[in-house]
Length: 236
Length: 298
Image 1 (cartoon, one colour):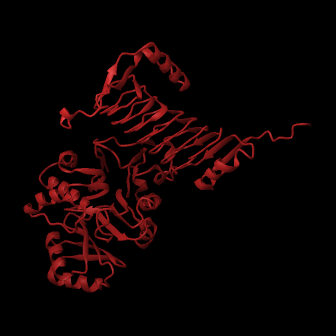
Image 2: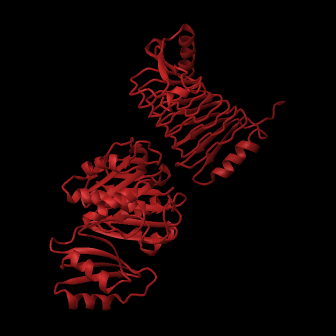
Image 3: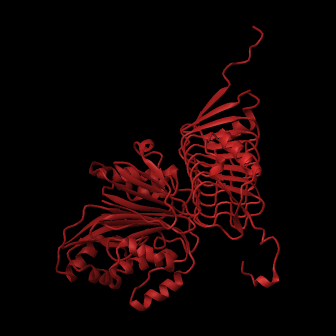
């Protein structure tokens, strides 16, 4: 009889009856105090900014399609969307894990500093734009300008990539399994090393994907844009 | 910003519910476009000898029955008018070009929003829900429609600047985005005798495509030509009496989601405008890819 803590640690939110502001307030301020660590969200119906700015070890399961900026700025939490995501999923994530079971719209994982973003389906254009250290694993294909100006972190693409992959890359690394329609300025294919294969194996395992790392190619920066060349006449 | 919505019913039993299915779609795009809204709805066509004109009088009080009498005195044809407040649909056997020209000279307070055999057009300033109520959008019937909620960026907030834009017969276009070369397009079209009603960038795209249709292009060919002629950001949604078409520019900055089922094709800037549709969880959902043309026929 000593343990009187409630066994039910799951809380359910129905957005058909409540609003996103109340949900996010609960996730920010009250969930931890109430000892709730699992939250299920029903009827998201494309609402924006669901589970944004989380800063605690919560497990948020969203059952349906979401709009812009789901799990933006996420820290520590694990957010799963059982549906598709609108633009800017997990943008500026700091840590934790965001999993989109369907497809993700433009700029998924934009500017994310840490953590892991997994997209089971395709990601649209500009996936991982300005990535700053997070890992992104896309089960499907990515749209044009993905990893544009990505500074740190890794992007795994199990399908194909459209135009200008890795344009103006800094130190981020891309592993791509399918066809690349075109590489962006200063991006180049490089040989896979044992370190790459080990890192990729780990990322695929974390994402529940069974591909063989040997099927992937590495894309990284040729670093020719790192310094300004007076002779280049502004043409690179 | 701006919101777009499109709906084409494949199951003809849904034609009587076209308006009621659409209103939550349009109202769902209010945050993207709170300052004006508009709608083109394609109905059962009038007979071959007739055309319909959607007329709008704005703030002016127009005596529609007097207008009809003046038209009847001028044109020896059968005419009918269905009036709702400051909006009316004139059905006439007179030549539509002559009728439009006559209205331009003799009824300056009346704007012609559309001309065709299927299209009815409504647009006005105000919140989408208020406009839907004002023009009883819920009760509209038809095979397909094209709607828009506007947040003005490039030109003034007036009914004339609201979307859809129309040109020619039974053609309309709505736009989310902004064009950077509308004046060049206009400079190219005006010497061909094509007249513009506003300084709006979308009107340039609308008149460009309609010009290409008149020159013999089909709509897809016209849109493909637009890839090199129209510079800027766009998701365009277009309607003809037979077709609904969506296209996004190469950078696909402006969003769009399509839901397709056996019963309908529904299009909106965001999924939140589609969430209420019947059996949406069984519809196939996708985002139109950049510079890929998607169209559906009735």
